[in-house]
Length: 423
Image 1 (cartoon, one colour):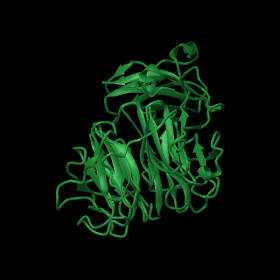
Image 2 (cartoon, rainbow, N blue to C red):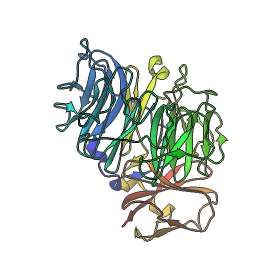
Image 3 (cartoon, helix red, strand yellow):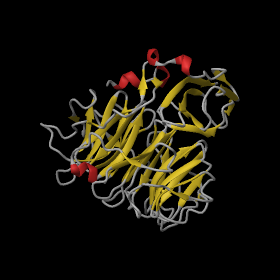
Image 4 (cartoon, rainbow, N blue to C red):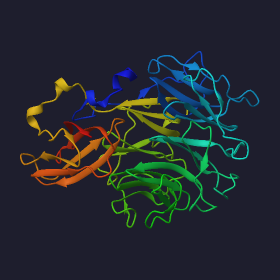
Protein backbone atom coordinates (compact mmCIF):
# COMPACT_ATOMS: atom_id res chain seq x y z
CA UNK A 1 0.00 0.00 0.00
CA UNK A 2 1.76 3.11 -1.16
CA UNK A 3 0.00 6.39 -0.45
CA UNK A 4 0.94 7.80 -3.82
CA UNK A 5 -1.03 4.98 -5.42
CA UNK A 6 -4.20 6.66 -4.21
CA UNK A 7 -3.38 10.21 -5.20
CA UNK A 8 -6.15 10.20 -7.80
CA UNK A 9 -9.38 8.39 -7.10
CA UNK A 10 -10.22 8.83 -10.76
CA UNK A 11 -7.81 5.98 -11.56
CA UNK A 12 -9.50 3.60 -9.16
CA UNK A 13 -12.75 1.67 -9.24
CA UNK A 14 -15.04 0.61 -6.41
CA UNK A 15 -16.06 -3.08 -6.16
CA UNK A 16 -18.57 -5.19 -4.41
CA UNK A 17 -17.33 -6.45 -1.10
CA UNK A 18 -15.19 -5.56 1.87
CA UNK A 19 -15.75 -8.94 3.53
CA UNK A 20 -12.03 -9.71 3.61
CA UNK A 21 -10.82 -6.22 4.50
CA UNK A 22 -9.51 -5.67 8.01
CA UNK A 23 -7.67 -3.07 10.05
CA UNK A 24 -3.89 -3.21 9.64
CA UNK A 25 -1.45 -2.26 12.40
CA UNK A 26 0.70 0.77 11.62
CA UNK A 27 3.17 -0.09 14.41
CA UNK A 28 3.46 3.50 15.61
CA UNK A 29 5.03 2.37 18.88
CA UNK A 30 7.36 -0.24 17.41
CA UNK A 31 10.97 -0.37 18.69
CA UNK A 32 13.24 1.50 18.98
CA UNK A 33 10.54 4.14 19.62
CA UNK A 34 8.73 3.62 22.93
CA UNK A 35 5.01 2.95 22.94
CA UNK A 36 2.82 5.96 23.68
CA UNK A 37 -0.78 7.02 23.22
CA UNK A 38 -1.91 7.91 19.69
CA UNK A 39 -4.13 10.98 19.85
CA UNK A 40 -4.62 12.04 16.25
CA UNK A 41 -3.62 10.97 12.73
CA UNK A 42 -3.36 12.65 9.33
CA UNK A 43 -1.71 12.22 5.93
CA UNK A 44 0.16 14.92 4.02
CA UNK A 45 2.46 14.91 0.99
CA UNK A 46 2.67 11.10 0.87
CA UNK A 47 3.44 10.55 4.57
CA UNK A 48 1.45 9.54 7.65
CA UNK A 49 1.68 11.65 10.81
CA UNK A 50 0.51 10.63 14.28
CA UNK A 51 0.29 12.93 17.30
CA UNK A 52 1.23 10.88 20.35
CA UNK A 53 0.98 11.89 23.99
CA UNK A 54 3.41 12.64 25.55
CA UNK A 55 6.14 11.90 22.99
CA UNK A 56 5.17 14.20 20.14
CA UNK A 57 4.68 13.68 16.41
CA UNK A 58 5.79 10.60 14.50
CA UNK A 59 6.11 10.32 10.73
CA UNK A 60 6.14 7.40 8.32
CA UNK A 61 6.87 7.57 4.60
CA UNK A 62 6.48 3.81 4.02
CA UNK A 63 2.90 3.15 5.23
CA UNK A 64 3.94 2.38 8.78
CA UNK A 65 6.90 0.07 8.17
CA UNK A 66 9.20 2.56 9.93
CA UNK A 67 8.65 5.71 11.96
CA UNK A 68 10.70 8.75 12.91
CA UNK A 69 10.05 11.35 15.61
CA UNK A 70 9.64 14.87 14.16
CA UNK A 71 9.51 17.22 17.16
CA UNK A 72 12.08 19.87 16.22
CA UNK A 73 10.61 23.17 17.38
CA UNK A 74 7.63 21.76 19.28
CA UNK A 75 7.36 22.86 22.93
CA UNK A 76 8.78 20.57 25.62
CA UNK A 77 7.31 20.56 29.14
CA UNK A 78 9.04 18.51 31.83
CA UNK A 79 10.63 16.37 29.16
CA UNK A 80 7.34 15.71 27.33
CA UNK A 81 6.05 16.94 23.96
CA UNK A 82 2.32 17.13 24.55
CA UNK A 83 1.04 16.85 20.97
CA UNK A 84 -2.74 16.54 21.10
CA UNK A 85 -3.74 16.78 17.44
CA UNK A 86 -2.24 16.83 13.97
CA UNK A 87 -3.73 17.98 10.69
CA UNK A 88 -2.91 20.18 7.74
CA UNK A 89 -3.97 23.07 5.58
CA UNK A 90 -3.33 23.08 1.84
CA UNK A 91 0.34 23.96 2.34
CA UNK A 92 1.32 23.30 5.96
CA UNK A 93 1.22 20.66 8.67
CA UNK A 94 -0.46 21.79 11.89
CA UNK A 95 -0.03 20.41 15.39
CA UNK A 96 -2.16 21.26 18.40
CA UNK A 97 -0.25 21.24 21.68
CA UNK A 98 -0.85 22.35 25.26
CA UNK A 99 1.21 25.41 24.32
CA UNK A 100 -0.85 26.41 21.31
CA UNK A 101 -0.84 25.60 17.58
CA UNK A 102 2.39 24.94 15.67
CA UNK A 103 2.98 24.61 11.94
CA UNK A 104 5.56 23.00 9.71
CA UNK A 105 6.26 24.16 6.18
CA UNK A 106 8.80 21.39 5.50
CA UNK A 107 6.88 18.16 6.15
CA UNK A 108 7.69 18.02 9.85
CA UNK A 109 11.43 18.73 9.68
CA UNK A 110 10.85 21.77 11.90
CA UNK A 111 7.94 23.53 13.61
CA UNK A 112 7.13 27.12 14.49
CA UNK A 113 4.33 28.78 16.51
CA UNK A 114 1.17 29.56 14.53
CA UNK A 115 -0.96 31.32 17.13
CA UNK A 116 -1.53 34.60 15.34
CA UNK A 117 -0.46 38.11 16.37
CA UNK A 118 -0.22 39.28 19.98
CA UNK A 119 -3.67 40.27 21.25
CA UNK A 120 -5.48 37.82 18.99
CA UNK A 121 -3.73 34.61 19.92
CA UNK A 122 -5.42 31.28 20.54
CA UNK A 123 -5.99 29.84 24.01
CA UNK A 124 -2.79 28.43 25.51
CA UNK A 125 -2.84 26.32 28.67
CA UNK A 126 -2.93 22.72 29.86
CA UNK A 127 -6.72 22.42 29.70
CA UNK A 128 -7.43 24.42 26.54
CA UNK A 129 -5.74 22.97 23.49
CA UNK A 130 -6.43 22.30 19.81
CA UNK A 131 -8.20 18.94 19.96
CA UNK A 132 -9.31 18.55 16.32
CA UNK A 133 -8.08 20.08 13.05
CA UNK A 134 -10.20 20.22 9.87
CA UNK A 135 -9.57 21.74 6.45
CA UNK A 136 -12.46 22.45 4.09
CA UNK A 137 -11.38 24.12 0.86
CA UNK A 138 -9.05 27.01 1.70
CA UNK A 139 -10.16 27.30 5.32
CA UNK A 140 -8.69 25.40 8.26
CA UNK A 141 -10.69 25.05 11.49
CA UNK A 142 -9.33 24.20 14.92
CA UNK A 143 -11.69 22.91 17.62
CA UNK A 144 -10.48 23.74 21.12
CA UNK A 145 -11.35 21.84 24.28
CA UNK A 146 -13.20 23.56 27.09
CA UNK A 147 -16.36 25.64 27.15
CA UNK A 148 -16.73 28.55 24.74
CA UNK A 149 -17.21 31.00 27.67
CA UNK A 150 -16.99 34.30 25.76
CA UNK A 151 -15.76 36.04 22.60
CA UNK A 152 -12.50 37.29 24.12
CA UNK A 153 -10.54 34.11 23.34
CA UNK A 154 -10.64 33.13 27.01
CA UNK A 155 -12.24 29.75 26.42
CA UNK A 156 -12.53 26.91 23.96
CA UNK A 157 -14.58 26.71 20.79
CA UNK A 158 -13.91 27.12 17.07
CA UNK A 159 -11.14 29.10 15.38
CA UNK A 160 -10.41 29.38 11.67
CA UNK A 161 -7.52 30.48 9.47
CA UNK A 162 -6.97 30.93 5.75
CA UNK A 163 -3.20 31.55 5.98
CA UNK A 164 -1.73 28.54 7.80
CA UNK A 165 -2.23 30.08 11.22
CA UNK A 166 -0.64 33.47 10.61
CA UNK A 167 -3.97 34.93 11.75
CA UNK A 168 -7.11 33.42 13.28
CA UNK A 169 -10.74 34.37 13.65
CA UNK A 170 -12.96 33.04 16.44
CA UNK A 171 -16.28 31.51 15.40
CA UNK A 172 -18.34 32.38 18.47
CA UNK A 173 -21.41 34.14 17.11
CA UNK A 174 -24.43 32.06 18.06
CA UNK A 175 -22.55 29.60 20.27
CA UNK A 176 -23.56 29.60 23.94
CA UNK A 177 -20.97 30.27 26.61
CA UNK A 178 -21.58 26.89 28.27
CA UNK A 179 -21.04 24.87 25.09
CA UNK A 180 -18.11 22.54 24.51
CA UNK A 181 -17.52 21.87 20.81
CA UNK A 182 -16.46 18.34 19.85
CA UNK A 183 -16.18 18.06 16.07
CA UNK A 184 -17.11 19.58 12.70
CA UNK A 185 -18.57 18.22 9.45
CA UNK A 186 -19.27 19.90 6.11
CA UNK A 187 -22.19 18.95 3.85
CA UNK A 188 -22.35 21.07 0.72
CA UNK A 189 -22.39 24.63 2.04
CA UNK A 190 -23.62 23.75 5.55
CA UNK A 191 -21.10 23.34 8.34
CA UNK A 192 -22.19 21.34 11.39
CA UNK A 193 -20.71 21.44 14.88
CA UNK A 194 -21.44 18.82 17.51
CA UNK A 195 -21.58 20.37 20.98
CA UNK A 196 -22.37 19.46 24.57
CA UNK A 197 -25.82 21.06 24.40
CA UNK A 198 -27.07 20.70 20.81
CA UNK A 199 -26.20 20.29 17.15
CA UNK A 200 -25.24 23.62 15.60
CA UNK A 201 -25.05 24.66 11.95
CA UNK A 202 -23.49 27.48 9.97
CA UNK A 203 -24.19 28.55 6.39
CA UNK A 204 -21.45 31.20 6.29
CA UNK A 205 -18.47 28.93 6.94
CA UNK A 206 -18.34 29.33 10.69
CA UNK A 207 -18.88 33.07 11.04
CA UNK A 208 -22.25 32.58 12.75
CA UNK A 209 -24.15 29.60 14.16
CA UNK A 210 -27.68 28.50 14.98
CA UNK A 211 -29.24 25.33 16.31
CA UNK A 212 -29.89 22.60 13.74
CA UNK A 213 -33.47 21.45 14.04
CA UNK A 214 -34.61 20.02 17.36
CA UNK A 215 -31.29 18.57 18.51
CA UNK A 216 -31.41 20.08 22.02
CA UNK A 217 -29.32 17.24 23.45
CA UNK A 218 -25.58 16.62 23.60
CA UNK A 219 -24.08 15.64 20.25
CA UNK A 220 -20.60 14.14 20.52
CA UNK A 221 -19.91 13.47 16.82
CA UNK A 222 -21.70 14.29 13.57
CA UNK A 223 -21.40 13.61 9.85
CA UNK A 224 -23.78 14.74 7.12
CA UNK A 225 -23.97 13.57 3.51
CA UNK A 226 -26.49 14.99 1.05
CA UNK A 227 -28.68 16.25 3.90
CA UNK A 228 -28.63 12.93 5.76
CA UNK A 229 -27.28 13.64 9.24
CA UNK A 230 -25.83 10.82 11.34
CA UNK A 231 -24.88 11.63 14.92
CA UNK A 232 -23.59 10.01 18.08
CA UNK A 233 -25.52 11.71 20.87
CA UNK A 234 -26.17 11.43 24.61
CA UNK A 235 -29.32 9.54 23.57
CA UNK A 236 -27.43 7.04 21.40
CA UNK A 237 -26.80 6.96 17.65
CA UNK A 238 -29.44 8.82 15.63
CA UNK A 239 -30.09 9.96 12.06
CA UNK A 240 -32.16 12.64 10.36
CA UNK A 241 -33.10 13.42 6.75
CA UNK A 242 -34.80 16.77 7.36
CA UNK A 243 -32.10 18.95 8.84
CA UNK A 244 -32.62 17.65 12.35
CA UNK A 245 -36.32 18.56 12.59
CA UNK A 246 -36.97 14.92 13.55
CA UNK A 247 -34.58 12.17 14.59
CA UNK A 248 -34.74 8.39 14.32
CA UNK A 249 -32.84 6.19 16.80
CA UNK A 250 -30.36 3.79 15.17
CA UNK A 251 -30.59 0.04 15.66
CA UNK A 252 -27.72 -2.04 17.11
CA UNK A 253 -25.41 0.82 18.04
CA UNK A 254 -24.35 -0.79 21.31
CA UNK A 255 -24.11 2.20 23.67
CA UNK A 256 -27.42 3.63 24.88
CA UNK A 257 -25.80 6.65 26.53
CA UNK A 258 -22.50 7.45 24.74
CA UNK A 259 -19.87 9.64 26.34
CA UNK A 260 -17.90 12.60 25.06
CA UNK A 261 -14.94 11.64 22.89
CA UNK A 262 -16.77 9.54 20.32
CA UNK A 263 -15.73 10.07 16.70
CA UNK A 264 -17.58 9.51 13.43
CA UNK A 265 -16.62 9.60 9.75
CA UNK A 266 -18.29 9.08 6.37
CA UNK A 267 -16.07 6.92 4.17
CA UNK A 268 -16.49 4.55 1.23
CA UNK A 269 -20.29 4.89 1.22
CA UNK A 270 -20.50 3.96 4.91
CA UNK A 271 -20.31 5.62 8.31
CA UNK A 272 -17.76 4.46 10.91
CA UNK A 273 -18.09 5.33 14.60
CA UNK A 274 -16.19 4.73 17.81
CA UNK A 275 -17.99 3.58 20.94
CA UNK A 276 -15.63 4.68 23.76
CA UNK A 277 -17.19 2.07 26.02
CA UNK A 278 -15.46 -1.09 27.19
CA UNK A 279 -13.97 -3.24 24.42
CA UNK A 280 -16.80 -2.70 21.93
CA UNK A 281 -14.44 -0.89 19.56
CA UNK A 282 -15.53 0.39 16.15
CA UNK A 283 -18.99 0.08 14.62
CA UNK A 284 -20.12 0.87 11.08
CA UNK A 285 -23.37 1.34 9.20
CA UNK A 286 -23.95 0.53 5.53
CA UNK A 287 -27.34 2.21 5.32
CA UNK A 288 -26.88 5.73 6.65
CA UNK A 289 -27.25 5.05 10.35
CA UNK A 290 -30.34 2.84 10.28
CA UNK A 291 -28.49 -0.08 11.85
CA UNK A 292 -24.92 -0.74 12.94
CA UNK A 293 -22.52 -3.67 13.14
CA UNK A 294 -19.13 -4.17 14.86
CA UNK A 295 -16.09 -3.78 12.61
CA UNK A 296 -12.92 -4.61 14.53
CA UNK A 297 -11.23 -7.28 12.40
CA UNK A 298 -7.47 -6.91 12.83
CA UNK A 299 -7.59 -4.97 16.11
CA UNK A 300 -6.45 -7.55 18.64
CA UNK A 301 -5.13 -5.28 21.42
CA UNK A 302 -7.90 -4.92 24.00
CA UNK A 303 -6.60 -1.48 24.97
CA UNK A 304 -7.06 -0.27 21.39
CA UNK A 305 -10.64 -1.58 21.36
CA UNK A 306 -11.23 0.29 24.60
CA UNK A 307 -9.80 3.62 23.51
CA UNK A 308 -10.14 4.86 19.93
CA UNK A 309 -9.37 8.52 19.40
CA UNK A 310 -9.78 9.88 15.87
CA UNK A 311 -10.54 8.86 12.27
CA UNK A 312 -8.90 10.26 9.14
CA UNK A 313 -9.56 9.44 5.47
CA UNK A 314 -7.28 9.96 2.48
CA UNK A 315 -8.13 8.63 -0.96
CA UNK A 316 -9.36 5.08 -0.44
CA UNK A 317 -7.59 4.66 2.90
CA UNK A 318 -9.24 5.08 6.28
CA UNK A 319 -7.10 5.56 9.39
CA UNK A 320 -7.78 5.54 13.11
CA UNK A 321 -5.59 6.54 16.04
CA UNK A 322 -6.04 4.32 19.12
CA UNK A 323 -4.42 4.15 22.53
CA UNK A 324 -1.27 2.14 21.76
CA UNK A 325 -1.27 2.02 17.98
CA UNK A 326 -2.88 3.42 14.85
CA UNK A 327 -4.52 1.39 12.08
CA UNK A 328 -5.39 1.64 8.41
CA UNK A 329 -8.24 0.13 6.42
CA UNK A 330 -8.33 -0.09 2.64
CA UNK A 331 -11.54 0.93 0.93
CA UNK A 332 -13.15 -1.21 -1.72
CA UNK A 333 -11.23 0.10 -4.72
CA UNK A 334 -9.49 -1.98 -7.40
CA UNK A 335 -8.15 -1.51 -10.92
CA UNK A 336 -10.42 -0.67 -13.82
CA UNK A 337 -9.62 -3.94 -15.61
CA UNK A 338 -11.57 -5.83 -12.92
CA UNK A 339 -14.84 -4.01 -13.52
CA UNK A 340 -17.51 -5.97 -15.40
CA UNK A 341 -18.75 -2.99 -17.33
CA UNK A 342 -21.42 -4.93 -19.18
CA UNK A 343 -23.29 -5.67 -15.94
CA UNK A 344 -24.09 -2.10 -15.01
CA UNK A 345 -25.10 1.13 -16.75
CA UNK A 346 -22.71 4.00 -17.40
CA UNK A 347 -23.62 7.56 -16.32
CA UNK A 348 -24.14 10.05 -19.13
CA UNK A 349 -22.89 12.58 -19.95
CA UNK A 350 -19.55 11.87 -18.30
CA UNK A 351 -18.78 15.59 -18.04
CA UNK A 352 -21.82 17.52 -16.83
CA UNK A 353 -22.87 20.98 -15.84
CA UNK A 354 -26.24 20.80 -14.10
CA UNK A 355 -27.03 17.07 -14.02
CA UNK A 356 -26.28 13.60 -15.37
CA UNK A 357 -28.40 10.47 -15.79
CA UNK A 358 -28.03 6.79 -14.90
CA UNK A 359 -30.41 4.40 -16.66
CA UNK A 360 -31.39 1.80 -14.05
CA UNK A 361 -34.21 0.30 -16.10
CA UNK A 362 -32.51 -3.11 -16.17
CA UNK A 363 -31.70 -3.09 -12.43
CA UNK A 364 -33.69 -4.17 -9.42
CA UNK A 365 -35.80 -1.42 -7.87
CA UNK A 366 -34.82 -0.21 -4.41
CA UNK A 367 -31.10 0.30 -5.05
CA UNK A 368 -29.00 3.20 -3.78
CA UNK A 369 -26.76 5.42 -5.92
CA UNK A 370 -23.89 7.34 -4.30
CA UNK A 371 -21.31 9.89 -5.37
CA UNK A 372 -17.90 9.79 -3.68
CA UNK A 373 -15.38 12.60 -3.88
CA UNK A 374 -11.60 12.27 -4.28
CA UNK A 375 -11.13 11.56 -0.56
CA UNK A 376 -13.58 8.65 -0.64
CA UNK A 377 -16.19 10.72 1.22
CA UNK A 378 -19.83 10.29 0.29
CA UNK A 379 -21.20 13.59 -0.99
CA UNK A 380 -24.55 12.55 -2.46
CA UNK A 381 -27.02 9.71 -1.95
CA UNK A 382 -30.22 8.67 -3.74
CA UNK A 383 -31.88 5.79 -1.90
CA UNK A 384 -34.67 3.38 -2.86
CA UNK A 385 -34.50 4.40 -6.52
CA UNK A 386 -36.92 2.93 -9.07
CA UNK A 387 -35.96 0.69 -11.99
CA UNK A 388 -35.95 3.60 -14.44
CA UNK A 389 -33.65 6.38 -15.62
CA UNK A 390 -32.38 8.39 -12.62
CA UNK A 391 -31.58 12.07 -13.12
CA UNK A 392 -28.97 13.28 -10.63
CA UNK A 393 -28.84 17.02 -10.09
CA UNK A 394 -25.53 18.70 -9.41
CA UNK A 395 -26.88 20.96 -6.70
CA UNK A 396 -24.02 22.39 -4.62
CA UNK A 397 -21.36 19.95 -5.83
CA UNK A 398 -18.08 21.67 -6.60
CA UNK A 399 -16.09 21.14 -9.78
CA UNK A 400 -14.10 17.92 -9.79
CA UNK A 401 -14.07 14.17 -10.41
CA UNK A 402 -16.54 11.91 -8.60
CA UNK A 403 -17.11 8.17 -8.49
CA UNK A 404 -20.70 7.09 -9.13
CA UNK A 405 -21.46 3.99 -7.05
CA UNK A 406 -24.33 1.47 -7.14
CA UNK A 407 -25.45 -0.34 -3.96
CA UNK A 408 -27.32 -3.55 -4.71
CA UNK A 409 -30.62 -3.62 -2.74
CA UNK A 410 -30.44 -7.37 -2.09
CA UNK A 411 -26.81 -7.99 -1.15
CA UNK A 412 -25.56 -4.52 -0.21
CA UNK A 413 -22.69 -5.04 -2.66
CA UNK A 414 -21.03 -1.87 -3.97
CA UNK A 415 -20.08 -1.45 -7.61
CA UNK A 416 -18.72 1.51 -9.48
CA UNK A 417 -20.77 2.83 -12.37
CA UNK A 418 -17.77 4.91 -13.46
CA UNK A 419 -16.55 8.41 -12.91
CA UNK A 420 -18.29 11.69 -13.75
CA UNK A 421 -16.77 15.14 -13.97
CA UNK A 422 -18.55 18.21 -12.65
CA UNK A 423 -17.35 21.08 -14.84
